[in-house]
Image (cartoon, rainbow, N blue to C red; front, side, top):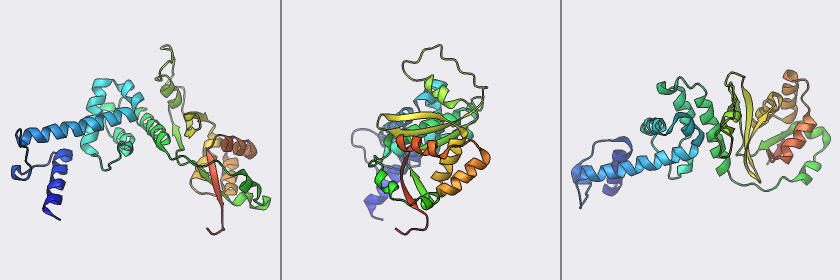
Length: 260
């Protein structure tokens, strides 16, 4: 490691982790080293706070601005940025909240963090070319069960004990203040994905969630469908296929056993 590489690594540790620094190694010509480091550290933390606020706007509204600032500070201390792309920062928030004592009285908050990160992830997911229907038409019917469907990389499926999508919707711009939510009315399954119109949060049936999750895990369609029908006998495969192809959730496929 060169001298300058060592110095930059040390400076990065000072800014991110509050590590000790050697005054002779870091030079601030116009003010003290301590003051210079504090300026950089405040800028670093401020940027990460703003990043979290952008990724978790509903959570910020739920807990209030002052408490969110405290929460973000605690998160940043435990999870320093490890990427030059700030769009990737903050994904550990749900796991962090699961063990954060100060939000124990808000048991739905980790699930809301999962939903907001899913929205964030969908928003920045790569665009894909349109689905090739002609390729699907060329598949022999006896191979349908071997289809390995690919979900759009921006898709996330969530299951919660709380009415997450309603809670999220109630905190969007233009929604009436009288929006009433009963947090004890039961949970839901939510699909977060992006289509041509933007990111959508859709409350989906348990059977659809069951089926899509198994496709997302790489199971052939025949196996995934049999497992879903076993638990949900009324599941309609043809309807599900048409719907999720039209919505841009299913974006491609391979065939089990085929190379390449």
